[in-house]
Picture 1 (tube, rainbow, N blue to C red):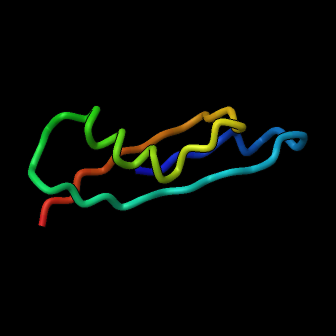
Picture 2 (cartoon, rainbow, N blue to C red; picture 1 turned 90 degrees about the horizontal axis):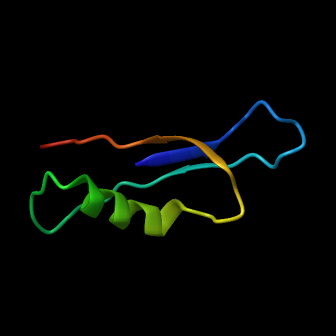
Length: 58
């Protein structure tokens, strides 16, 4: 999962971050995947404009 705030406003601090999360079991529930990743990358002081979730099955 990756998130970022708007990069075009020069008055706002820039923030982008991502996390690779390995779950204990397979799931198609995006809520579980998102919760696991957001705990690592979310910062409440930023206004976000984009989020991305990728599913990598190996």
